[in-house]
Image 1 (cartoon, rainbow, N blue to C red):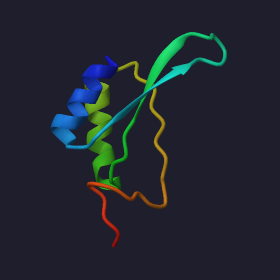
Image 2 (cartoon, rainbow, N blue to C red):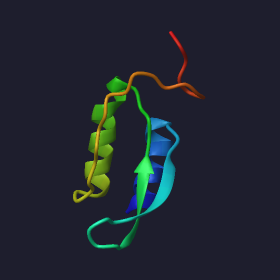
Image 3 (cartoon, rainbow, N blue to C red):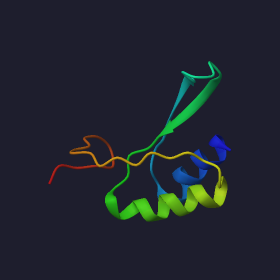
Image 4 (cartoon, one colour):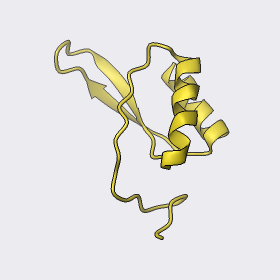
Length: 75
Protein backbone atom coordinates (compact mmCIF):
# COMPACT_ATOMS: atom_id res chain seq x y z
CA UNK A 1 0.00 0.00 0.00
CA UNK A 2 2.96 2.35 0.52
CA UNK A 3 3.51 2.66 -3.22
CA UNK A 4 -0.18 3.35 -3.78
CA UNK A 5 -0.16 6.10 -1.15
CA UNK A 6 3.01 7.56 -2.65
CA UNK A 7 1.50 7.66 -6.14
CA UNK A 8 -1.73 9.21 -4.84
CA UNK A 9 0.18 11.96 -2.99
CA UNK A 10 2.23 12.80 -6.06
CA UNK A 11 -0.73 12.89 -8.45
CA UNK A 12 -3.54 14.31 -6.30
CA UNK A 13 -1.75 16.58 -3.82
CA UNK A 14 1.19 17.34 -6.13
CA UNK A 15 3.82 16.79 -3.45
CA UNK A 16 6.99 14.77 -3.65
CA UNK A 17 7.64 11.85 -1.35
CA UNK A 18 10.72 10.07 -0.06
CA UNK A 19 10.67 6.39 0.88
CA UNK A 20 13.16 5.17 3.48
CA UNK A 21 14.02 1.54 4.24
CA UNK A 22 13.86 0.99 8.02
CA UNK A 23 13.95 -1.84 10.55
CA UNK A 24 11.47 -2.14 13.41
CA UNK A 25 13.23 -1.72 16.75
CA UNK A 26 10.96 -4.17 18.54
CA UNK A 27 10.43 -6.81 15.85
CA UNK A 28 13.55 -6.34 13.77
CA UNK A 29 11.35 -6.61 10.67
CA UNK A 30 12.34 -4.66 7.56
CA UNK A 31 9.81 -2.03 6.54
CA UNK A 32 9.62 1.21 4.60
CA UNK A 33 8.42 4.63 5.69
CA UNK A 34 7.22 7.49 3.55
CA UNK A 35 8.14 11.11 4.26
CA UNK A 36 6.17 13.98 2.76
CA UNK A 37 6.16 17.68 3.63
CA UNK A 38 2.87 19.50 3.03
CA UNK A 39 1.43 22.86 3.93
CA UNK A 40 -0.96 23.03 6.88
CA UNK A 41 -3.92 23.53 4.53
CA UNK A 42 -3.05 20.24 2.77
CA UNK A 43 -3.05 18.05 5.90
CA UNK A 44 -6.78 17.27 5.76
CA UNK A 45 -6.55 16.18 2.12
CA UNK A 46 -3.47 14.08 2.92
CA UNK A 47 -5.23 12.35 5.84
CA UNK A 48 -8.28 11.61 3.68
CA UNK A 49 -6.12 10.22 0.88
CA UNK A 50 -4.17 7.97 3.26
CA UNK A 51 -7.31 6.66 4.98
CA UNK A 52 -8.98 5.93 1.63
CA UNK A 53 -5.90 4.04 0.41
CA UNK A 54 -4.96 2.16 3.60
CA UNK A 55 -7.17 2.42 6.66
CA UNK A 56 -4.47 0.67 8.73
CA UNK A 57 -1.69 3.14 7.85
CA UNK A 58 0.27 4.57 10.79
CA UNK A 59 0.82 8.32 10.41
CA UNK A 60 2.79 10.86 12.38
CA UNK A 61 1.98 14.51 11.70
CA UNK A 62 4.46 17.08 12.96
CA UNK A 63 4.40 20.84 12.87
CA UNK A 64 7.71 22.08 11.52
CA UNK A 65 9.22 25.53 11.59
CA UNK A 66 10.42 25.81 8.02
CA UNK A 67 10.72 23.91 4.76
CA UNK A 68 13.14 25.11 2.11
CA UNK A 69 13.15 23.64 -1.35
CA UNK A 70 11.16 23.15 -4.52
CA UNK A 71 7.45 23.75 -3.92
CA UNK A 72 8.10 25.71 -0.73
CA UNK A 73 9.25 29.30 -0.70
CA UNK A 74 10.35 31.67 2.00
CA UNK A 75 7.80 34.30 2.92
